[in-house]
Image 1 (cartoon, helix red, strand yellow):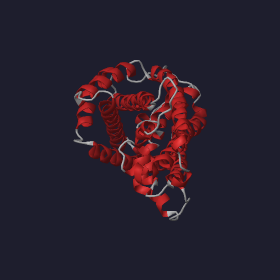
Image 2: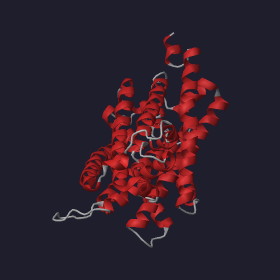
Image 3: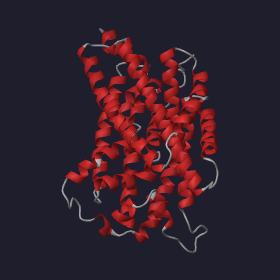
Image 4: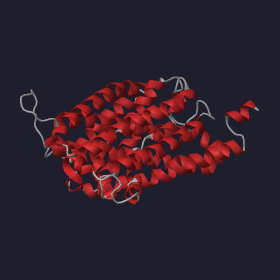
Length: 368
């Protein structure tokens, strides 16, 4: 079967999947990308506003999916806009998830090569992670959810400990004055925050596998709130310790923060290694869920078995991941994906929901 309707997940597992998806490479890159655009220390305000916008978009997606219980976006979009347009939209979403998978696996490989496996060919690292991810997703979404339930608490604890220990070099003046240059810099930063909150679109798929799909809005709110709090703490601590100028000059400012202090007398005096290892696991989580979403889309669109499609996507994601020649092109690729997500998953759910409500489609039609 191309759809495993018996592969159910709990509401708590849904929350974990959303949070793990959003907590991808953002913690490593967010302080730099956001500060570059805002050019002040007010990026944390952009995070709050951006988080609320993404949350509203996510709730809209959940409300739309609740009109078509047991179905993913790939299955019900054709019922809303017709077969031809629906197939085109599904194809765009599949390409989007493939692009996200490739971006995440490339960032994971770049960080691994720079800090852990210096001298190792990039393609070796990418391929190794991809085969591990393939092994995970072949077992279905429930297996992924159980792994994420282990990764997320460890990630939160390690990040909070690292941020707490870095407080000794934190300077409150580095994040002052608040709104010193007005609201315009905050608005400029909204685009960057949308990319780090990429993950809400997975709710186009998860409600079909939830044991209690009516709790989808609750899962969306909690699942978005966890990354929002983590991102805010990270941004404030990194900018407060390194300053706006220092953050902009750094490729991986969060890791540089961990390397900028030592705690003498403890068993471990340097903590960037722990953050690095945990965040490789976190980026791996994002890669696997997008890999699975792309595979499911192709399977449901073509009405074929999902297993061969998973293997078939491996070379495609591999090629796309290695296309950027350097880190600047990798970040440009990420910005492009963020721009696409605004239109594909920001505006589209609203339009589809309006069509569903106006023409009384989905569950409403069945009830009538």
